[in-house]
Length: 141
Length: 218
Image (cartoon, rainbow over all chains, first blue to last red):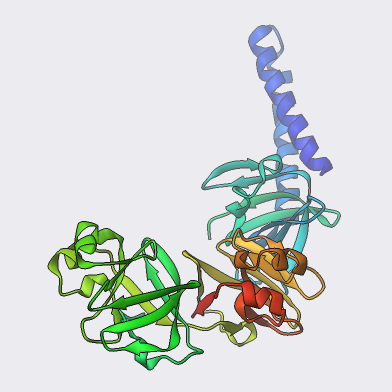
């Protein structure tokens, strides 16, 4: 999670640099290039971290518990890319963001009876923060 | 799925799923009330009589109608009694050309009121009908006394320890709520088993007696 925050910070710095460059053309070119390179390296590190920690699974759908938390039913994928093993029932962390490639972005705050089927029978990558899901990305298989 | 069903060949325990674009339900015979050209049967808790001499068509709102009304609104004909027979047929097979050409097809399939999820294979697709509604069930995980299923895309957990009934809004409900209005109950997990049962077949007689049949079709 810290690295995700770092990525967001890096992107903010990058955006700031671009704005600053536009406003203050006097800034040395070499300094801007160095900053951009540092940001690029940070993004690469974060991307690598995200890739290494992504768990691929087949999602069967969300269900809301009596206490209001959302639980995702899924099976992790084996080496052949097939859903295998026990059905897992993992709780979504607060404010988890679900990015669906085909139907747009859905935030956890928008989860309800109408939107809960967004993750039915989809292939997803997910990240854990402790024992809760912190982020989900759908991918086409 | 068939285009017709012969009521004379059904016994009292049989249940038949009927599906049309406008209606989905379950039919069963009423003992001793099936004769050529005059049949009485039950569809989703409602008793229907069709005869050659009177109304031989059934509308999608479950009202027996005569030929004139069927010709007036053929798209609303759910089924017909074939003349001089005990056979219910899709209106698209009627001899009446106006009804035949204007109607939507209806299919019939013998189903079950009880289904053992543990005996299904991964490729089996389960459908259910209940008072005008049809849906699909996918099994995610099943153990005696516990089942996680998808019902029309809704993830449902039924268990002996928690809620073992599902209502027609696809909500898990407990026994007290099922008893309060059994007609809303779609089906239940049979205690200690891996079987889904129609609400009309659960062991709780208060629920079973007030419930309308749900039919499962594989």
